[in-house]
Image 1 (tube, rainbow, N blue to C red):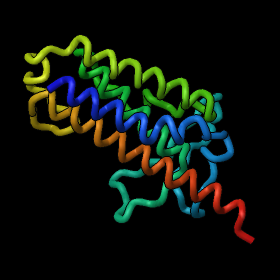
Image 2: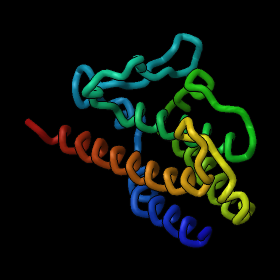
Image 3: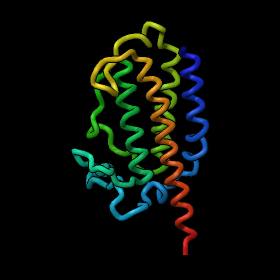
Image 4: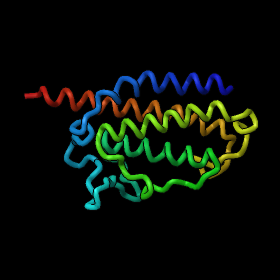
Length: 172
Protein backbone atom coordinates (compact mmCIF):
# COMPACT_ATOMS: atom_id res chain seq x y z
CA UNK A 1 0.00 0.00 0.00
CA UNK A 2 2.79 2.46 0.91
CA UNK A 3 4.58 1.75 -2.35
CA UNK A 4 1.51 2.65 -4.40
CA UNK A 5 0.88 5.81 -2.38
CA UNK A 6 4.53 6.86 -2.69
CA UNK A 7 4.44 6.20 -6.43
CA UNK A 8 1.26 8.29 -6.70
CA UNK A 9 2.83 11.11 -4.67
CA UNK A 10 5.99 11.15 -6.76
CA UNK A 11 3.93 11.05 -9.96
CA UNK A 12 1.82 14.03 -8.83
CA UNK A 13 4.98 15.93 -7.97
CA UNK A 14 6.75 15.13 -11.24
CA UNK A 15 3.75 15.92 -13.45
CA UNK A 16 3.21 19.34 -11.99
CA UNK A 17 5.63 20.64 -9.43
CA UNK A 18 8.76 19.81 -11.40
CA UNK A 19 7.21 21.53 -14.42
CA UNK A 20 5.67 24.64 -12.87
CA UNK A 21 7.65 25.48 -9.73
CA UNK A 22 10.99 26.17 -11.47
CA UNK A 23 9.25 28.70 -13.76
CA UNK A 24 7.66 30.73 -10.96
CA UNK A 25 8.75 34.33 -10.58
CA UNK A 26 7.85 36.97 -8.04
CA UNK A 27 5.85 38.67 -10.78
CA UNK A 28 3.90 35.52 -11.70
CA UNK A 29 3.16 34.80 -8.03
CA UNK A 30 1.56 38.21 -7.54
CA UNK A 31 -0.17 38.59 -10.92
CA UNK A 32 -3.91 38.96 -10.45
CA UNK A 33 -6.11 37.33 -13.12
CA UNK A 34 -9.02 39.57 -12.04
CA UNK A 35 -9.22 42.64 -9.80
CA UNK A 36 -11.13 40.67 -7.13
CA UNK A 37 -8.68 37.74 -7.08
CA UNK A 38 -7.52 36.60 -3.67
CA UNK A 39 -3.79 37.16 -3.28
CA UNK A 40 -1.05 37.57 -0.69
CA UNK A 41 -0.07 40.99 0.59
CA UNK A 42 2.74 42.48 2.67
CA UNK A 43 1.58 42.66 6.29
CA UNK A 44 3.61 45.71 7.32
CA UNK A 45 5.91 43.64 9.57
CA UNK A 46 8.05 42.19 6.79
CA UNK A 47 5.81 39.16 6.25
CA UNK A 48 2.99 38.26 3.91
CA UNK A 49 -0.67 37.50 4.65
CA UNK A 50 -3.32 35.90 2.51
CA UNK A 51 -6.75 37.21 1.61
CA UNK A 52 -9.28 35.23 3.62
CA UNK A 53 -12.98 35.37 4.38
CA UNK A 54 -15.19 33.28 6.65
CA UNK A 55 -17.45 31.96 5.40
CA UNK A 56 -15.79 31.55 2.03
CA UNK A 57 -17.80 33.25 -0.71
CA UNK A 58 -19.72 31.04 -3.11
CA UNK A 59 -18.39 31.00 -5.69
CA UNK A 60 -14.90 31.53 -4.33
CA UNK A 61 -12.95 34.26 -6.10
CA UNK A 62 -10.11 33.51 -8.49
CA UNK A 63 -6.72 33.25 -6.81
CA UNK A 64 -3.17 34.27 -7.59
CA UNK A 65 -0.28 31.85 -7.71
CA UNK A 66 0.91 33.47 -4.49
CA UNK A 67 -2.37 32.62 -2.79
CA UNK A 68 -2.36 29.08 -4.21
CA UNK A 69 1.20 28.46 -3.02
CA UNK A 70 0.36 29.92 0.41
CA UNK A 71 -2.61 27.54 0.65
CA UNK A 72 -0.50 24.58 -0.40
CA UNK A 73 2.23 25.40 2.12
CA UNK A 74 -0.32 25.92 4.90
CA UNK A 75 -2.31 22.70 4.55
CA UNK A 76 0.82 20.63 3.92
CA UNK A 77 2.58 22.02 7.02
CA UNK A 78 -0.57 21.33 9.01
CA UNK A 79 -0.87 17.78 7.71
CA UNK A 80 2.82 16.99 8.30
CA UNK A 81 2.66 18.31 11.85
CA UNK A 82 -0.42 16.27 12.66
CA UNK A 83 0.94 13.18 10.89
CA UNK A 84 3.96 13.31 13.19
CA UNK A 85 1.77 13.74 16.29
CA UNK A 86 2.28 17.49 16.48
CA UNK A 87 -0.27 20.26 16.93
CA UNK A 88 -2.39 21.78 14.17
CA UNK A 89 -0.75 24.60 12.21
CA UNK A 90 -3.19 27.47 12.01
CA UNK A 91 -3.56 29.81 9.08
CA UNK A 92 -2.04 32.58 11.19
CA UNK A 93 1.02 30.41 11.90
CA UNK A 94 1.67 29.85 8.20
CA UNK A 95 2.31 33.10 6.34
CA UNK A 96 3.22 33.08 2.67
CA UNK A 97 6.98 32.44 2.42
CA UNK A 98 7.43 35.59 0.33
CA UNK A 99 8.68 35.41 -3.24
CA UNK A 100 9.17 32.61 -5.73
CA UNK A 101 12.51 31.42 -4.35
CA UNK A 102 11.16 31.18 -0.79
CA UNK A 103 8.05 29.38 -2.06
CA UNK A 104 10.16 26.84 -3.94
CA UNK A 105 12.33 26.24 -0.87
CA UNK A 106 9.31 25.76 1.40
CA UNK A 107 7.62 23.39 -1.03
CA UNK A 108 10.77 21.35 -1.56
CA UNK A 109 11.17 21.02 2.22
CA UNK A 110 7.55 19.86 2.52
CA UNK A 111 8.04 17.44 -0.36
CA UNK A 112 11.11 15.96 1.33
CA UNK A 113 9.29 15.68 4.66
CA UNK A 114 6.29 13.95 3.13
CA UNK A 115 8.43 11.62 1.03
CA UNK A 116 10.42 10.66 4.15
CA UNK A 117 7.15 9.75 5.85
CA UNK A 118 6.79 6.83 3.49
CA UNK A 119 9.99 5.39 4.99
CA UNK A 120 8.74 5.56 8.57
CA UNK A 121 5.01 4.91 8.28
CA UNK A 122 4.13 1.33 9.03
CA UNK A 123 0.99 -0.50 7.98
CA UNK A 124 -0.29 0.09 11.53
CA UNK A 125 0.37 3.82 11.13
CA UNK A 126 -1.64 3.87 7.90
CA UNK A 127 -4.55 2.16 9.68
CA UNK A 128 -4.57 4.41 12.78
CA UNK A 129 -7.52 6.79 13.23
CA UNK A 130 -6.67 10.26 11.95
CA UNK A 131 -9.04 13.23 11.92
CA UNK A 132 -7.57 15.43 9.22
CA UNK A 133 -8.68 16.93 6.87
CA UNK A 134 -12.06 15.68 8.01
CA UNK A 135 -13.42 16.20 11.52
CA UNK A 136 -14.27 12.53 12.02
CA UNK A 137 -11.39 10.05 12.27
CA UNK A 138 -10.62 7.80 9.32
CA UNK A 139 -7.62 5.59 8.75
CA UNK A 140 -4.50 7.73 8.15
CA UNK A 141 -4.15 6.15 4.70
CA UNK A 142 -7.11 8.31 3.59
CA UNK A 143 -5.22 11.48 4.58
CA UNK A 144 -2.18 10.25 2.65
CA UNK A 145 -4.30 9.63 -0.45
CA UNK A 146 -6.02 13.01 0.05
CA UNK A 147 -2.61 14.73 0.23
CA UNK A 148 -1.60 13.21 -3.09
CA UNK A 149 -4.86 14.28 -4.74
CA UNK A 150 -4.84 17.76 -3.18
CA UNK A 151 -1.23 18.26 -4.25
CA UNK A 152 -2.08 17.34 -7.82
CA UNK A 153 -5.10 19.67 -7.79
CA UNK A 154 -3.15 22.60 -6.32
CA UNK A 155 -0.24 22.14 -8.72
CA UNK A 156 -2.69 21.99 -11.66
CA UNK A 157 -4.25 25.26 -10.48
CA UNK A 158 -0.80 26.84 -10.21
CA UNK A 159 0.04 25.60 -13.70
CA UNK A 160 -3.18 26.98 -15.17
CA UNK A 161 -2.58 30.36 -13.50
CA UNK A 162 1.03 30.37 -14.72
CA UNK A 163 -0.12 29.75 -18.30
CA UNK A 164 -2.78 32.47 -18.02
CA UNK A 165 -0.18 34.90 -16.72
CA UNK A 166 2.18 34.07 -19.57
CA UNK A 167 -0.54 34.41 -22.20
CA UNK A 168 -1.83 37.69 -20.71
CA UNK A 169 1.53 39.27 -21.39
CA UNK A 170 1.04 38.65 -25.12
CA UNK A 171 -2.53 39.98 -25.38
CA UNK A 172 -2.74 43.32 -27.15
